[in-house]
Length: 296
Image (cartoon, rainbow, N blue to C red; front, side, top):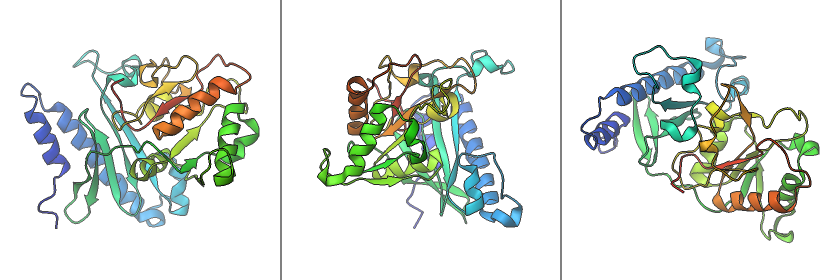
């Protein structure tokens, strides 16, 4: 029964009551995002019937062709000059300035996971009502993990610390970690993040030597920069050990290497990069992240 469940609209209204001076513009914008996600979910559900195959507009969009999960990532920032038309530089803000961040995942059900700074909550689309209903309140990222996700085809180009970490996971209970790990790879950052948030794990997209000019593969501003805002993780950047959320982008498509997931695995990664990497890089290697911002 859904009569006793909170909808996204109701939660936003309740949050606004705690801020009497709020204009309501943020709530309106979040509901606009939710409406867009409903429209995308509807079109994705038609697949080949709506000529969606081959589309390349969403996170993991190539998954449309094989009927696998994909998603949308969104972030809301304050306008530096309210009322003025937005310029590119207006978006070049560090992730710590986000007032809302989250994603939608389109799978067997459509789910939006977001935060407005008071915890991370997941809402499932009830197709008949057309409402997002609270189904995952106050999500907390588990501290330990027994699953890891990484694109193994790049293994020949990994740095020593990454290779050591993966080798130890593969060694299982007879190796130095003394426990078995499972490897996953969905080729969708949203799908990986959602699995990790709901059952733990760690996602890694490290810098490698396939293109030394690039400090990573994922976009800082609208991929890595969004997926961290308050679910119990510790965001850090390898070279100077600072929060990735504090890194101000200098380009809309700036890239960065990325680790996301259980705190225990993030701390082990930091240690391995201190102890086992032979060559120091000039560019950031890692931003360790759970979904949302922590107060360090």
